Length: 151
Image 1 (cartoon, helix red, strand yellow):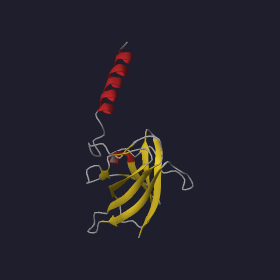
Image 2 (tube, one colour; image 1 turned 90 degrees about the vertical axis):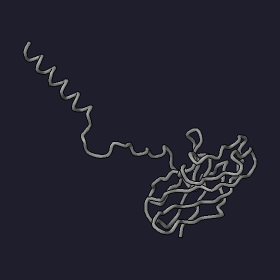
Image 3 (cartoon, rainbow, N blue to C red; image 1 turned 120 degrees about the vertical axis):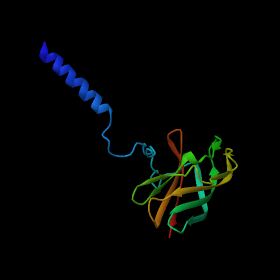
Image 4 (cartoon, rainbow, N blue to C red; image 1 turned 180 degrees about the vertical axis):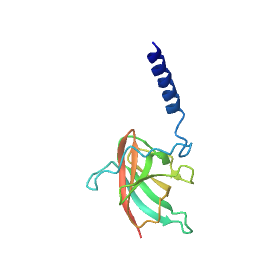
């Protein structure tokens, strides 16, 4: 009987220690990456983008501003929201639109078979030149994408 009490007590101590955390690292959770990446470049989508304004902030912040026209060739209205936009860099990394930036959409919802304009901001992880794939995810599906390049 004594052995089972000691084993039970040790189990409780281990369980409590395991729940307390390791003490290393930060207490804030890092954001999880998006579930999707861009489709292969040969893929066709019902939503397309035409880029008109591409700039990277100087001064060390590496903030990318993408201005683009949105063409919605689908039969469904399209909510234009920063949470649905991501970019993919040449190394495969995914960057979500900065929802705290001055992202804009005109109109806020693009009607079926209509056009709109948007400006989205992305915080690049490092200075970057090369291809950028902008893609839009709605209901866990990539519904639009377009490619441009940063020089």
